[in-house]
Image (cartoon, rainbow, N blue to C red):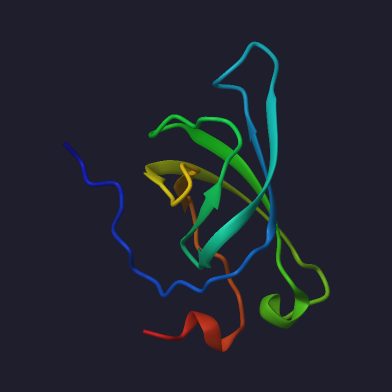
Length: 113
């Protein structure tokens, strides 16, 4: 069994709007609007109103504030893989997603250890 989660970058607790797209779950493409729980340059932890399959690939569109992104263009788009599922207090499900490539952001929050 391969361990898909190997945290290599610092995480910051940020609630950012995110859209998820997938063709793997339904005959029609699925689109989910939700928010992140925390973010790193390598991935996100987010809530999902719908179940996601660990190992599935999603297209992610993340709105990043310009003070974090370092530019006026603050929409980040990347493919990501669902690497784990976890239950939160109150029964909500959260999912860890790993980006196929790192976010290139200029902010001290990514430099924390």
